[in-house]
Image (cartoon, rainbow, N blue to C red; front, side, top):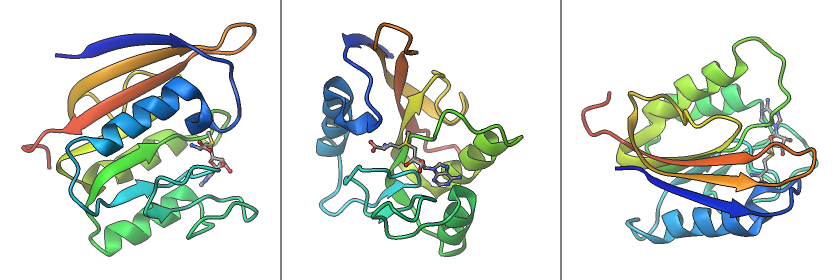
Length: 160
Ligand SMILES: C[S@@+](CC[C@H](N)C(=O)[O-])C[C@H]1O[C@@H](n2cnc3c(N)ncnc32)[C@H](O)[C@@H]1O
């Protein structure tokens, strides 16, 4: 069963600094996780939750400054399996197939029963066959800003 929640908060660039979104991330990172979880963040920005972090912007303090697809391909090649993937891509990419390409790479990187936390304009997460939608949090920013839809999705253990 999916839990639906709603919150109001001003929009700022660093998504995970927005109070209700910060609470959402920290809730899922503090529950049901192993002692030293593997947390992949391919679009890390200013966030500090990831243990494998990347951002294409060379000014961002990340473990890698690669395009997200190249970073995720590297993890796939190393057979990394994550407890959590944080999926907070930029909203303005016009490149055809960008979001699909990233999500296709994220799904196999997640352990069975692992989590993907997605943020953006869609409640799809990384695909409806991937697993249960545990929570959808709608954060309304008001004014001219689009809402941020936060999705917690747990990988079905039968999903390959
Ligand atoms: C929505 S922000 C992430 C914000 C982050 N969750 C936080 O709370 O600070 C998206 C990030 O993706 C980075 N980015 C944009 N295009 C990218 C790409 N092709 N590959 C990897 N990172 C990219 C941007 O530099 C930006 O820091």
